[in-house]
Image (cartoon, rainbow, N blue to C red):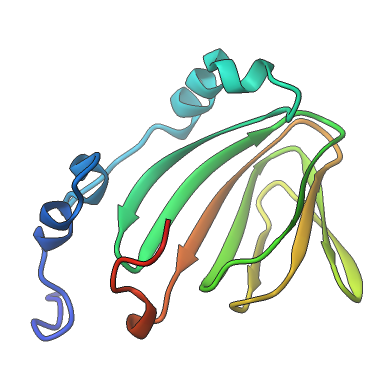
Length: 144
C-alpha cells in the first residue's frame, strides 16, 4: 500500500511543526491505558474544569487528542472547522446538539460534520479519542 505522492509526503509534517515535531512523525504508536494513567497525574486533572487532555498526533490537516473528563463535568458549547469523531474509550457521555442529545457509551463512535455546535457532558468519568480532520483547503497551518 502506498500513499498518493501528490497529496501526502511521509515525514514532511514533522518538519513543518516548530513545536513538538514528534507529534507528526511518519509512525506513531500509543498505549492508551498508560496515557490515561498519565493524564490522571496531570495538574489539569485537579483543576475545576475536571478534565485533562493530550494531543497524540498533530498534522496540518489532522489531529488526535485523548481527553479524560471527570463525572458530571462539561465542555461547553464549541465547534470545529473540520469534521470530528468521538471514540468513547471509558465511561458514558452525552453530546448536546442544537436539536438533540446523543448518549455515547464505551466502544461507540460518533462523527460530526464540520461546524456543528455541540456540548460534551461526562455522565461518568469518561475518556475518548477526539479526531479532527480539516479539508485540504483549510490545512494551511491555520488550525490550533
